[in-house]
Amino acid sequence: MNPVKRFIAGAVCPRCGEMDCLRSWRDEEQLYRECVRCDFSDAQRADGEPSPQELETRVNKVEEKPADPDAQPLLFHPNPGGSRQDH
Image (cartoon, rainbow, N blue to C red; front, side, top):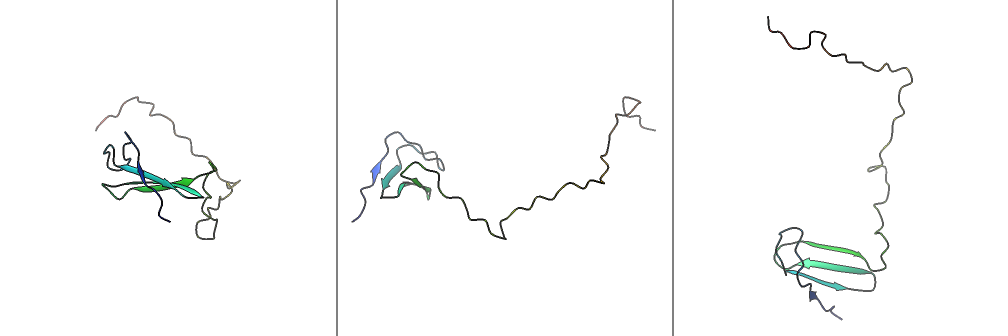
């Protein structure tokens, strides 16, 4: 069965900025919307829960490196002359 797609009155497309060009529909799991003037489309879960995040893999995993305990911080002091002098 094809879903009934309805236009959202007064809605503005987030991509092209045109008004009255978004339509929406839903199925058992998600709510969908799309623009009829550009290629914008998105979906969200119908139960209100956040969408599952991307699964952590060895490719997208960010490893936090611990700070080196022997590292010396750099301290920058302002120029004692106050302004730059060209010689």
